[in-house]
Figure 1 (cartoon, rainbow, N blue to C red):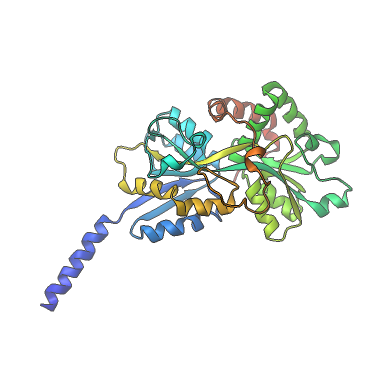
Figure 2: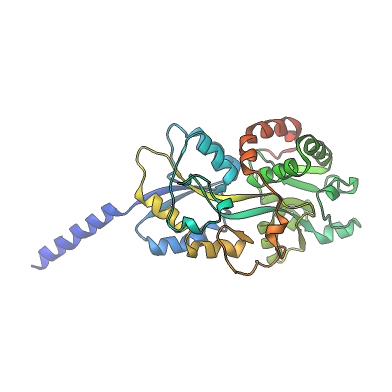
Amino acid sequence: MKKLLLMFIAMLTFAMSAFAGEITVYTALEDDQYPVYLESFKKQYPDIKVNIVRDSTGIITARLLAEKAKPQADVVWGLAATSLLVLDSQKMLAPYAPKGVEKVLPQFKDNKKVPAWVGIDAWMTAFTVNKPELAKRNLPIPASYSDLLKPAYKGLITMPNPASSGTGYLTVNAWMQIYKEKKAWDYMDKLHQNIAMYTHSGSKPSKMAATGEYPIGISFGYRGITEMKKGAPVAVVFPKEGSGWDLEANALMKKKSISPDAKKFLDWAISSEAMSEYNKNFAIITVKNSNPVPAGYVAEPLRQIIKNDLHWAAQNRERILKEWSERYDAKSEPKK
């Protein structure tokens, strides 16, 4: 009898393991964010193995496009909405309405009846500025995009390359939307004279400013605020003209066989538990909430962000990046 019972338990364990899923998730979320976010998913679905492939926005987007004929990812989590719009235009996304999608504000999700993508939070342009390094040079902290053009800042500024960084592209797109295209290129020509280096990571300019290597980093708010919380002698500046922004958004990849576990992941990714974690890092999440704005951000973040046509940004992305690279890529850091 005992032998039969052990055999039954072994068979049951094997059967249960056969139902345990495995999904591959491509993400551009920060290295220090996604493991924390995933904790509640793992508690809810301990039998689903999640393989994370993480890189910067530009690299993840390029990888997804390169894999179009044979997609490797099941889910895209926390990639720029402008990138997902490009994928959708290539018919690479499978429409899916995750549970609770009705709570996501209309401007932060695909407008089709069954959405191809759903936003989770917005990240926005900010400058991370090393205060002691500027004080040594008797220089004020820049408060605006126009301030960055002052000759006194020559060689002191880094920013992300928009071809490899979503933060870089949302900032370039902001200049396009604020100044209109011709004046935006004129602005970037002048800014280029003050740029020391274009990085391939959106967070790296903040980190370099924190160490004082280059005292002004055009980056995004979360990373500058994180460096400040770690004790770096920095100020985080949200530019007077308004911050460029994009949504971190999720989507289901179109494949011959779509895993039910991929849909479970997307349901979880806009759940109240997940949204609560996103809100610890970002001032704007895509569902209505009464939570206090995280420390370090402006008091009214929705007023800080520019009026932004994400569809225009997606449609013109390839053309803008090509011209940007032809004009400015000589100052980009070497690719690893």
